[in-house]
Image 1 (cartoon, rainbow, N blue to C red):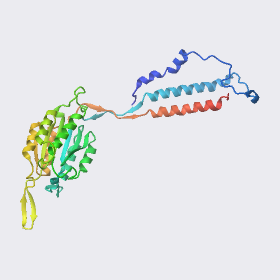
Image 2: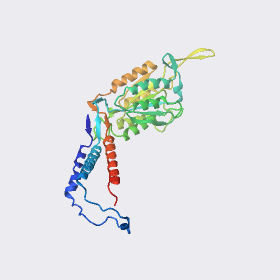
Image 3: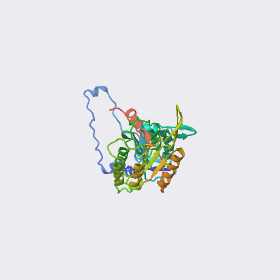
Image 4: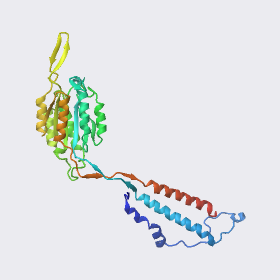
Length: 346
């Protein structure tokens, strides 16, 4: 259906008639509008009163001028074509992913599609699918190593966040692990953003259950300016719920000159600190020893932080104002051309 975005603009339609009725008429004057010395020598024919047969073109000109004005007012009212109402899912959650890019993420102890891959590759595959399922959520991405930085601010554009995650490179922010700085950065970015659309407009702070940090790491905090527990206390005060995931297998077979040796690639994982962080902020700690466990954790997170379907609908629209505006400009140009060519010069 066709709708007017600004229907009150139709109130401007009677302006030409009001101006004609309210403003005083210009008195006729016999004086020339422009005095040219010696013009009498050029023998210009005197203008005569318009004949009866010239009223018909004058009527057409007035009709075209009226139509031009109507089209201009119609264009100013912003006509648009409204499509069918589409349901929009919105959960009102602000979800941050903090991904560890320290050097230990190069450890190849995950199996993905029957191939051994490093930990970051497994995270990209599983977390990317998790982001895709978060319809209606604003998702952000923090990458950290020796330093932490915001790679993607909160956005509804999940595809862009997936792209940034896929382009992450191990060691880019440093080889060490600054878990505390990553949490502190998440707290800072979560508290400085406006409330999500589903949150009440009068509330300056989004409720705790609407702001979530998903922290994925395979080590212990050994860098940064703030400890993980200090950062967790800041998160708890700000209402940021943290779910921590410890990445890495418990056993890994390594071939040496003396045969195969079994090692623990997750010996540096500080599960005690990760559990304390999650408990202090009202979240949970998960252990991902392989790809299947990592997938199950993300599916469980979908249940813990579900996408709430709200009764909201969106009507796509196509602006149409340029059509009446183009016709009005065309008619206006025609009227100006007529005035310039058809009327006698004076």
